[in-house]
Image (cartoon, rainbow, N blue to C red; front, side, top):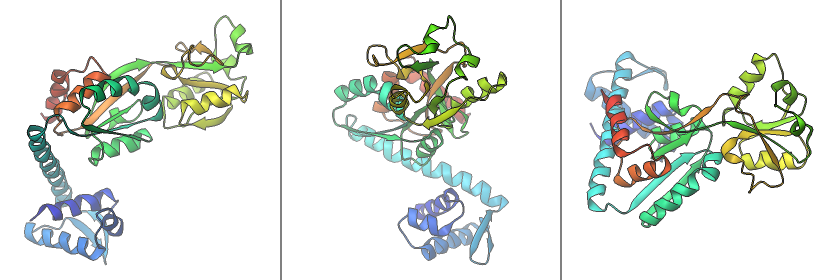
Length: 309
């Protein structure tokens, strides 16, 4: 038994039991992956996968248990490397953050600036994507932390910690009719074309649910993943924007006007997630605390410990 065999099994599962895709991801040949998996099955004395001809079609019952153990072993192997690196050089390394555009653009800069001043030798990488993609990046070891509002707090293999709360704001051009209302309503909002987030981002599901609860069907003419794109098209007069309050600033966005929509849509919570069982280097704890001052090392460790019990 060797770690290569374990990685081949894990990648085959991650690639939806597609041996060709697993081989491509591992930069090796499909016959090599298949052979190594069979060698492991022979050594363990159990069949991990159900096969139909040369194709893998499912995990066997013992295979599901084996895969869980393999995942833990590979995580611990990565932790072993991280532990050694931590003591060899505590001030250098790589920190990879997986997050959405809104978080990268509006909430991360302060923490990133503070972090780089304290850890100039640490290479910082920010990967952007949809929340489901961010969760997978952390699960696959491609990122140390994920920061998003949607999805990541429901992933069973991630430890999601609440960071901050925010609400939506409606943005319109100056002199827009909605500015004359004493109080904004969903009915009034539904009278105008709407520009807001793509369905996977920044509370879009709660926007849809709020309109549906009132029996309204909003005319969403454009969806985007980028708050700046939404504001650009609002500025062009194409519609009314609904975006995260953290993405609107009266001084920065002087060409637009913001209307509080906290009473129309539920408050949202941004979460920071790490992989269950992961070893976090000291500078990762520091970044988490810089981004979310309420999340000190003790709180993070307590959450990791609870998940392990």
